[in-house]
Image (cartoon, helix red, strand yellow):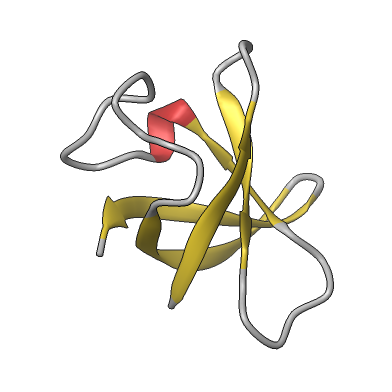
Length: 65
């Protein structure tokens, strides 16, 4: 899937907005591939896989598109 980094926190996680979806998708810094959390910018386009986590859907294998 493809989305855009909507927010980042200082606690090492953030949210990705997806076209056609009302709810943003959670991601954690440990789910990033090929980029560090500090390098990742709000507004960056990313690709990812959606998985069901403990607290609902989340993004894994997040990479710059």
